[in-house]
Length: 460
Ligand code: SF4
Ligand code: SF4
Image (cartoon, rainbow, N blue to C red; front, side, top):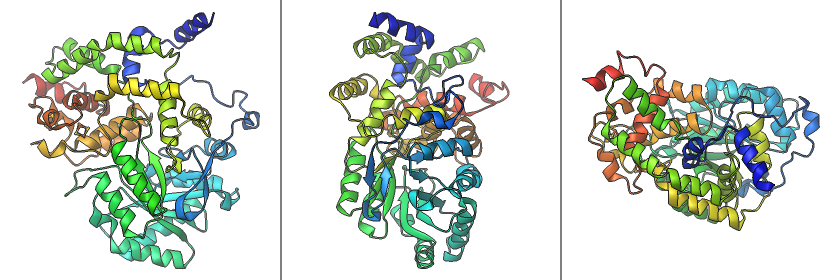
């Protein structure tokens, strides 16, 4: 009977074998899919009383007890969803000046002003722009305060500090001193998710370890997940030693590769050349079809989210993590993530992730890595493009991802179509990166099918 129900669930979810293959290669994260049921089925937030955070952890030397599941606010501009987030007991909010150009902070402010301010820890971030003077940072922080409609920011972070030198930016620290003295900022922090290849960049490990030693940082945001453990664990240990609160992004390293074959088919149908490396990638994926089927059956996977949930439990199983901050873009995300709060990472889940890693781990381009970038003769920032692709595919932030890619000043992955693929030789994880970059370019470029642009170039 059980199997029958599961089969039905599979069918209802429209999860065909082929989709599962794509999905299990990816964990098939169904973030933000239309039609998914909402936690508040009745339409009333009051009907969700049992949806509550169960785990709170100390955020390092701040002493604040934050929810083990925090809010990665990414594109969140819906005050009603934010109300639901807070009602569920999430009290760590990670946001940034740059998220939707201040609109996310504004949405947060519209809700926070009616709440007990002390019950919530708000972190916002400032990128290091051209004007690195103390005055410029102070002015920008004041604008954050206005948008957030609050008297103080709990933690002000340097957003995407790419080098050790950047995290020592004197104007920022001078501003922090002034703002702390005024009671406008309580703690100082940094985020880093690896290189963007602007000027000389350094690894996430190098930057975070230097931050741990620096002594001025109280809270950090880093990448850590089950496919990318070593660097994260080293950093987490260093932060623990200095009692620096660690919050985590990119908790879920899986992507949806389902469209790969379809995209290759589209190229063929259009009478265009399919790059050799992309062909290789597709055949590698096809070769995994049976393994994916076996994986699904062995672990009795009845929906797309089992791997994602296990991935977040893995992150929470590290006692040095204060809060995992996945992007919460809709009510389904909220429901799924809050349900993981306070849960244990069980033996079966561990086995599932080990098997996933063994079978499919090579298809994942590690966030914050960038080791292959120096081998690219075209200066393509592999890691950043793969991150935008992650925003699109895993976080459901399609517009943001496409906007960022469209406004990208560096070389894009159209360079990869007819390249020799030096980066693949340089990747220590065996990631078929050229094929993934080609697909990322197709995903992130709205006018990709315009025959006057890329197709035309490939044909020639
Ligand atoms: S392709 Fe490999 S080396 Fe390059 S960024 Fe990704 S994981 Fe790192
Ligand atoms: S495929 Fe070529 S152009 Fe693209 S990142 Fe790799 S080396 Fe650079």
